[in-house]
Image 1 (tube, rainbow, N blue to C red):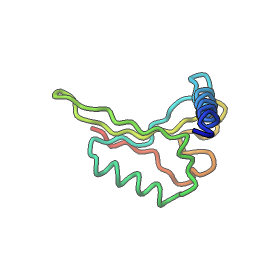
Image 2 (image 1 turned 90 degrees about the vertical axis):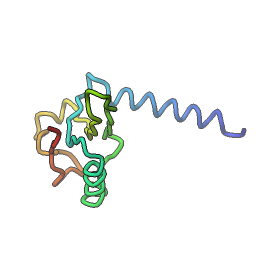
Image 3 (image 1 turned 180 degrees about the horizontal axis):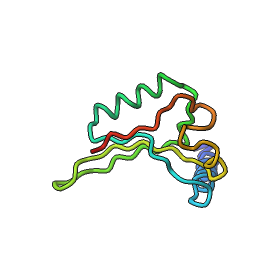
Length: 108
């Protein structure tokens, strides 16, 4: 297929940039929201998208920890906080597109 090699190289470069950008030496993942209720999880994501369409979703991580018999399923939303921005109000949601984004957690 024409262009397949070019697309493959582009995906590889994007993957390498993401590995460098989100490396443990570059920063840490701050949990913004955690819940065991899938409906609450979807509502929170919908509210975030409506509240601020300028959020950098490439720096977000959405995890679903699958439960088993002894543990329930947990839904977690985290954002990457670079080490250089950690001292400048990391708990309040610093950076462009983060005004008014609350740091909440409701898992019991």
